[in-house]
Length: 257
Length: 247
Ligand SMILES: Nc1ncnc2c1ncn2[C@@H]1O[C@H](COP(=O)(O)OP(=O)(O)OP(=O)(O)O)[C@@H](O)[C@H]1O
Ligand SMILES: [Mg+2]
Image (cartoon, rainbow over all chains, first blue to last red; front, side, top):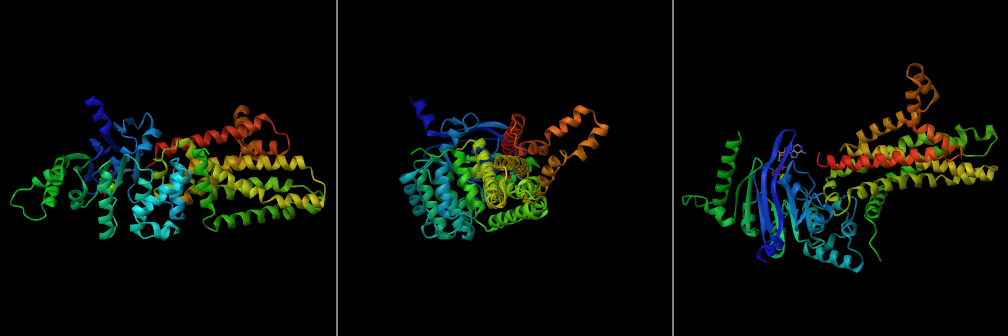
């Protein structure tokens, strides 16, 4: 009984993910498990393999080795069922520039099989949640970077997924919006399994229940934000997380070099 | 009310995106204009003293040589450039339906261009007494031809982020497929290749099938050629997208 309950709560179960691009290992044996109620912050220097890992979690990239289960469904065995479980904000928040925000969200809803009054309700709800109401009739190409990012978040959460995978969700947002989006993620994190990547260490402290640090394709840390910070020696009094991040990523860079 | 099929959702978004800019309208106008010129001036409608659309259908493979690649170049190259391919292929839609939906939108646009030439049909009917059966066969042949061109373009567009490359390579590929149906070219091959090979080249040429269909005899052989070419090329597009989505 306990076993089944655990499996149900385990929404992301990725084992031994490896991806090589022309002989270069971008991601090397990464395993991640995320349960409902967890918000995992993915950290790592540029080119560490965060985006590549997230692309394998969503099935966009086929892993060279390893497997992914989302909501208990293997993404290779039943991709359509697995894809229903998650929402995804790809890196750079891509969207069709010539569509209005409303047209775009309508398309995403239609593609997800949400129709009629349910669709209108879902679109109104996300528009309110990420503050898009004022720009619904505007084409996406005319939006500022921050608003584009919000459109990306809106399409990811439109169907209220159990699993949320977001590549740099707060990149390009102003401080107020950062605050709002973090609050939204914290709130959604109570009932969902969320993985997000970020370069802002404070963000991990502010919204994540767990931090995973990846360098040169390998996981070098997996623990709570307080465990992360506790790695800094007592002598370091300021920017303790930056200190730990530097130590962790520098050590791995030496190993791989 | 049941939800629309995934390929319909994808196709309607795609088709609407063509009209987001005036470009699609410009293309249609140019197409109709050229169709008119080919039919009435270059085709020598008055000199021949025969009112029909034969010249138009004879020139159609050349007209589509610029229209089809211009439509198909966006199909996947644009999705890649924008990064929206990452959204599109992680939505809970079967990939074959996504690929099919995009292809059908492109085909719908070319069929629309053909429909827009119906005034030519009306004109020749008014001027004389054309063989309407032959005209319908001509339209069917032109629609199938544009479908094959677009399916070729769909595969090529799946390989690149660059629309200009997609356009040029598609136009060249379609041109070659057209060229190897011309007697001059076939005779050249027959000179030094075994008969079987030369016949095979004629068999894969779109022109051979197009002309036979245009003549008004809708033969099973030609129908199978067009349908299987489209199915094979659309399938190849899906395989290509799945294989190198992120590249
Ligand atoms: N399609 C690809 N072909 C070849 N190499 C790739 C491809 N995609 C990613 N890489 C390489 O894989 C490595 C990991 O890249 P990735 O984008 O996952 O890093 P990241 O951690 O997301 O970095 P950033 O913080 O800059 O977003 C990099 O060295 C990158 O050059
Ligand atoms: Mg990245």
